[in-house]
Amino acid sequence: MTPALAIEATALTKRYDDATAVDDLDLAIPEGTVYGFLGPNGAGKTTTMQMLTTLTRPTSGTASVAGRPIADREAVVPHIGYLPEEPPLFEELTGREQLQYVAGLRDLPKREAAARIDELFDRFDLADAAEKRIGAYSKGMKQKAGIIQAILHEPEVVFLDEPTSGLDPRAARTVRETIAHLAAEETTVFLSTHILPVVDELADTVGVLSNGSLVTEGSPDALKRRAETGEHRTLEDVFLEVTSEVDYPEGEVA
Image 1: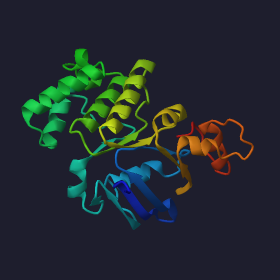
Image 2 (image 1 turned 90 degrees about the vertical axis):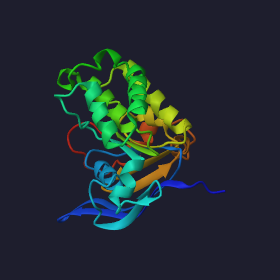
Image 3 (image 1 turned 30 degrees about the vertical axis):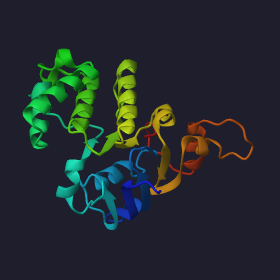
Image 4 (image 1 turned 180 degrees about the vertical axis):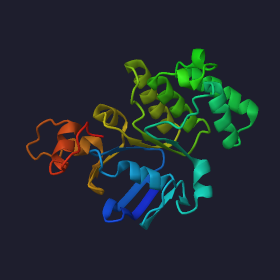
């Protein structure tokens, strides 16, 4: 039996004047899987995530998330969580106030929300900072607070843009464990990151975007077996090969 699709896109395209950010993108991502989304800076990853999370409308093409068309924002939003690269946080609020505010937006019952907030504060080692203002948080603490608010309402599909950015090794491990836990609970995770070992460890399928187009897709192991020589290869080798003709902007691959 073919598994249901959590994310499906057909010929999804986004143009800005004469520039094409995403070009004719097709996706078919089954429920309960982790999809690693890779590409150099400017490849169109963030634009893709913004379309799938209903933050920007495609120029053409169609897509659905959690079985709802992205053209219907009100239908999609309750079923997704999204962590952008810069978490949307109010620095004048405490960590707890921020999450209580998000819980209210999500219509979570107060008692359920309070228990869930405490559980996630403990999981991400933020319990001691719950009553501190977010403006006093470090970058890593803000990143963890952003992850918590993305998964607070236990969405069916979670979009994570560079979720381990700014985190120390212990916190990054907590994020990896959280992603694995989400997948075990049948939550679909769309993971954009430049940390290739994270994708290699967690992703069921990897897609590589280059100049707005999906240039290769498959399991990490399948992509590493691309070489006919049979030599052991890393996911980084594959990534560099399939994007070798891209003129990268200055800065790290992301």
